[in-house]
Amino acid sequence: MNNRERKYRIWDEDNKRMIYSFGNPFHDHLAIGLDGKLYSVGDSYNGAWCYEEDNMIVMEFIGKKDRNGKGIFEDDILSWKYFDNIQIGRVMYVDYSFVLIHENGDTWFLENMFEPTIAGNIYENPELLKENQK
Image (cartoon, rainbow, N blue to C red; front, side, top):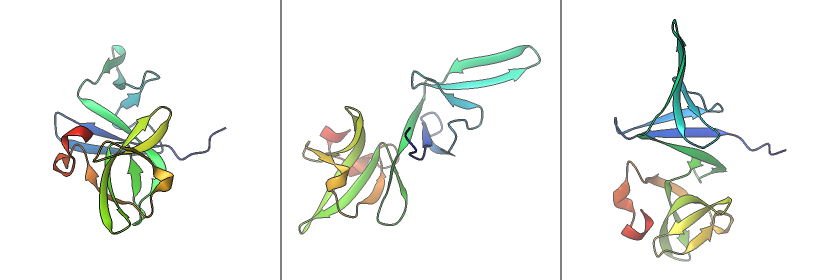
């Protein structure tokens, strides 16, 4: 059994804001389906309802924290020092694991990075990335 901490956040494309939901994929009547899509759910006098949220993107906590103790999520932009150079990359879920896509297009394993720092994320800070990382 995997005891990894489950946390989620959601980018609301319509309102240009991040919604955080810690420990429970339900937040403000939002639910993550088995298909990975986000749904609004609820009930009313006329019965239960459920519909897909098209303009919301779900991101999962990767189970690691940056050098400042802040949780790292999918689509975060990380910076880290490699020898004397500052590197930048995007956290993505690829082939059943979380990896970092470096600004030069290379794939890095997060375990190979020393003290990464969250610089932002692709929705609120897209200017931090080069075109091949978006």
